[in-house]
Image 1 (cartoon, rainbow, N blue to C red):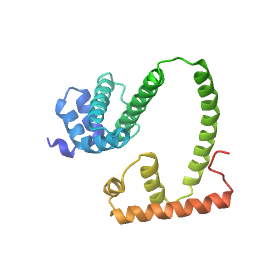
Image 2: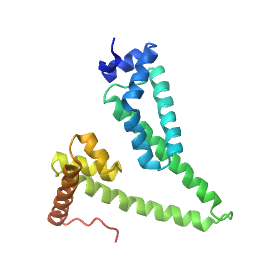
Image 3: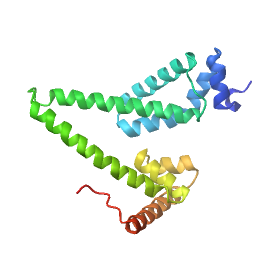
Image 4: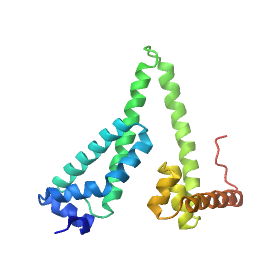
Length: 195
């Protein structure tokens, strides 16, 4: 049996049944893409390796406990796990920095931060909702490139490779996406900044 020709869902099923080669195939199939995604977020090779390992530990545990849900694509699920682990890392870092900032505890800092953060979060959520609504009006190719560049923080080289187009085409799609967004913002009279 040629594992490289087997689809992801079947490989997951085989691994759940005890076939270790199935997992190795999945890891080989997506390791570069996943590692690049993680390193683009954390900008640290060693940390990216750790998060990569933690991601597959979660994948293995989920599959072994028969909790894997085959509704979506395997790689999207794995990327979501990695993304959540990256967020967890930054949350831990933020808490760690808060505690060590100057060694002194100030109740005013905590109250002010929480109040401002709640208000800022509401504003940020509204801006993101408005922006998401606008993105839905873009042609699919432009929407995809914009999402990959802005939300996934991918380089144009990576976007080009993932979408199967040249870097110039990816840059062009981004340019037209931004032009179209500006038109949509004017047409809908949307303010995307905090007042």
